[in-house]
Image 1: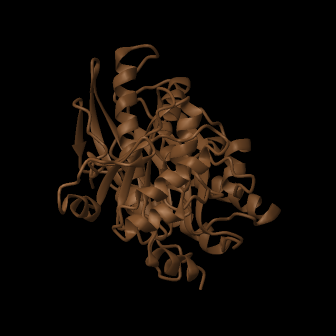
Image 2 (image 1 turned 135 degrees about the horizontal axis):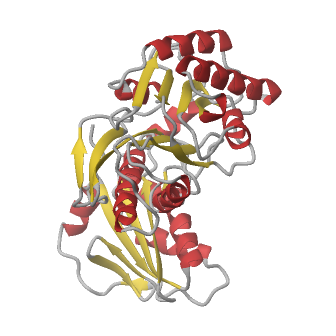
Length: 415
């Protein structure tokens, strides 16, 4: 599996890609099995465990209708010392009331008992249809089977078990060269729809055998998510189940200390991994045919840059134009202007790759080489820049086009 498949993410020089997934770093084992939660009979329950104490970090959806597993993890687990997670697909266990919360507790209790770790150190995550109670008989028997199947080569099975409408594999592993030695990082994620900024809809899990203090790990995770999962959109809809968790076993014997050069190097590697996963999600956006990198520059401040970039990225008119290979820059200008409603006249420049289409808020007078724009619009990955000429702040978003297949898939998702 590969993490760096997009031209929009560069592998750091001190990083080497490896075959593997979340069970590749020392100390971790994983499994993925079919517990009968999916009608298809495909794998739908995964278990990831480190038997020894870990430092951990996590971020969760801010959605006010957060699913039971999110509530359980926030309120009843040790956020800085998680050693494992049990995950099901096929049901989101969201909007399922008191029983849903009790079911999440039961999943954690069973998984922790089977894995031999404290229940406070076992996280829970779910994905699937909202409002559907978990079939707990199947879940409970599945956890037992998954525990028996735990293996240091089971990361790929775990990654498969957490998928729903995903078509692209989203997992991989790397080695990171630090001054004190080499460490490994493994990662996997799922997500293809109901994806919006601010913890985009996803489940993501990252493991490392580096020894990283929990406080530093949380800070590095926030920085990594800011430029990856919080900078992507497929359809502008935030989910009830979003979460990302990082587990650090320390079993490489290589310590990463706050304020050190190694902390910077490790943080860069973590950010690259998260960005690689995020771009795979955008590319796998339900029905998507294109990934667009939107660079908003010249904003008055960071908030304005983010506001404009998110407005344009979530515009149905903009996204359908990219699906139709129509370089309709006027839709981008209109969307950016709407985001800045009430402000002085927008005198923005717009570029598709290096081709100027608008200058100072009007059509660019520079001629475009014949066929050049058609070639750009035919690419699977397209870079667009909007210079607002209002300041020095910038923000980058990644989004997919909006296609007929997206409508079909989501119209028929529960039927």
